[in-house]
Image (cartoon, rainbow, N blue to C red; front, top):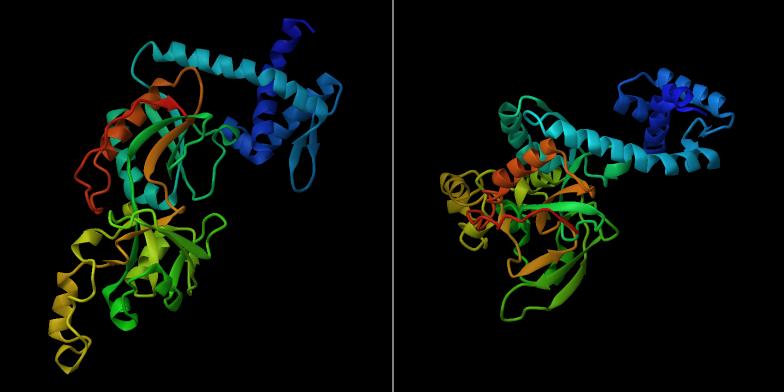
Length: 358
C-alpha cells in the first residue's frame, strides 16, 4: 500500500491503539473527542480496508485479535515518537499550553490538590487540567493519564517520580471514645476495641505495628482487628473517628483542620466522669474545646503497610516531559514543600528532589 493510500487510515490506526489501551469504545471515543458510534464505524472501516478482523467485540468487553494486537505492537512506538516530537517542538515557542490529565486519591485531591490546581490555572491560562479522583490503582499509560499523585514507599520502576513531600499516618480516636472504652497501652489491647478499617490490600483485617521508640526500636506486633465500619476513603474514616465510633488510622493529609496529634496524646488529662463533670456540663464542654479533636493512640508504635511515607508525582517514563507537565509538577513541589499543616513537624520543608526514573 502506498503512502497516499495509507494516509486516510492514519487517524483510524491511532484510534486502534487507543482502543487497545482502553479496551472500551466509550473510553476511546471520550479520549479522542468523537462519538462512540463514530469510533465503532471507523474501526469497522479499518477492518474492511485491512481485509482482516482486528477487534473482538462482546457485550461485556472489547479485545484485539492476534492480527489487531500485532498491528498495535508495531505502530505504538511510532505514534509515541510522533507525540513526543510534536510536544517538544510546540514547547520551543510561547507559553506552556495543552491538556494535562491527572489522577489522585479522593481525600488528598479534594483537600490539598484542588486548591493547588486553582492557583496554577490562574498562572497558566493556556494549560487545561482534567482531574480524576479515585482511590483505585490507575494504569497511567493504558488510561491516558499524564500524571498521578500518589502516597507510596516504592514508586514503580517504569515511571518518572518526583517527591512532593513527606507524609505520615496516625492511629487516632476521639476523647469521648477513649473515656468510654479506655486508652490502649499496647497494640494487643486493640482486640478489645472497635477499630475502623481502611480497605486496602490483603491486610484489611489486621494491623502490623513496629515500635518507633529509641529504647525498643525494631519490635513488631501483629494484631487482628474488627469494628463496625470499613471504608476505602480516609475522609469517611475521619468523620467516623470524630463521631466517636472507634480507633482508626488516618494519613496526615486527612486530619481535621487544626488537629495536631502531638498536642494531646493521652486521655488522662480530661476531667473524670462524675456528677461534677456530667456529660454536657460546662466543665466537660470546656475540656473538649481545650483539647485536640482527635487523640493519638499508641504514639510509640507505627502501623505498617497502609499509607506511604512520601507523596509523589508519577509519570510513565519517556525521554521528554512536556513543558506543561514540568510546570505543573514544579508548582506542586512548591505547594507541597512544607507537608501538611495539621501534622506534627509540618513546618519543616522537605528537600526538593529532581525527577528520576525509579
